[in-house]
Image 1: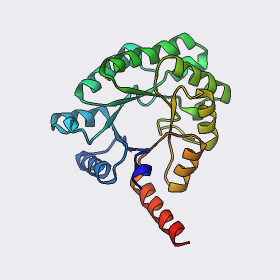
Image 2: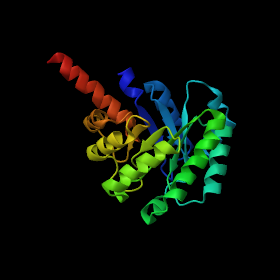
Image 3: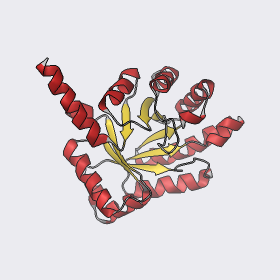
Image 4: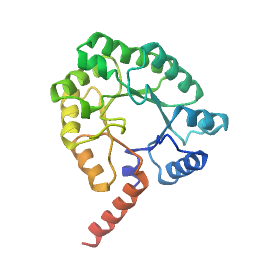
Length: 229
């Protein structure tokens, strides 16, 4: 149970999420022992102001360039730096998908590298979101190669704002393309334990989902059923 929970980034990125929802997400993250809590920049500001990010037990993931990724690089760098200053431990940045689709691979890479450079100053992790639902398989492979070359730590399937999100096919493709140089985070539309397990089996190192509690409770039930059998 504990090992499975440590694979999950509990996520609260709904635009209308209020303070009560944030408090609940924090409590759930600590209760179940999820890997990290992924929240909005505003909510990171709130938790930092309350001193909660100084506690070692709460790992917070900060979104950068959400949700479309075509923010100018200078803005992504400034956003990443400020969120790291506030206490975020990891950055989930949206890559410049328009640059990738246009074939401007130099800008696509420099955009990622600039954020990685800032994170390196703080000794923090960067995950790069590709939005695989908008890409063909060749673009996914090329993007993964660039993510690795730019020095990021993870390649991530989706923001969750575009469908389809994470698929077994895409996770396996990213894992193969990574050649062990970067890890894979599956995110987008993951709502059930069996789906999460399938993605982990396909090569996902981390699962990002807002259905974390449901997934962990389903996983608990599956384990009990297996033990009974």
